Image (cartoon, rainbow, N blue to C red):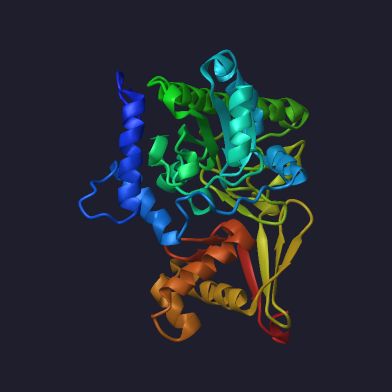
Length: 399
């Protein structure tokens, strides 16, 4: 049995369902001494009761339209592995009377497959493609509770908050991007409560593991495709370099220790890369060539404060220019004056705000500024990049 399973081998499902119905009615009705459900279920019921959902199951159901479902499917990384997920259950779904359901990270059902008879029952419940199956909408259920608990969940019969869901079991597990850990969605197997088998949780675990392996394989294939498409550039480029995709994942490296990922490159932003120094990414094929700018082609930056402030950076290729907010221009000016020693958050707070009480605001401003200028601003302490020749134009005499 899985560590999160709702039953154990040999459980009398009918008796267990009756016991849970009595417990549900007593707890939801506020009867003293009614006992408590499992801790996970208790936490979920408390969350749902605070929201004020109706345990009788009359809560509103709204479904996204077909066009929106299709859009979410196209944009979901799980579209790459949904066929593999289907294969895990397709051989036994009809015989076992359950459904495979895959949602996105919002809990919206994007794919549903399995027993035709169970699909018809699910239609009546509103357990359909396009429905949002979160605790906030439909109460305690494996999909929504797995999202809330960020953990696998199995619920049986009246462990569901809504009475209309009591005839069901559901077993759900989050699925994450194996590269970043980002939540991509939920894989769920649901069916009539009295057909629950202890092995269902293991089936869901297997499906999630398979999907994450396949997602990693798709990632490797994309990087290999990028390497092949950029072979002509790599063959004629000397010196240390990285070839990365649009998310900064490294497809090829030369003259530098292997790194799995760097900051996301942009054509209009300098990039500081450990082992390479200051770089200006160059678009090649479907990715980016990242290499240091050295010698007489070094990066230089001009902070112009004579009118509406802007920053101009010159490097290997054509210069790029970006407008700056007055606050960001002020931050850059203070960092320039501080020199190589830079400034702590507290000292920068004094310089920008006149006191040291705005360190949190300073950190937020630096974060926003780095989204604009990238590695031109370094941290710990905050300072301008030493790999860039800086000039600040504050008035006509500086021009």
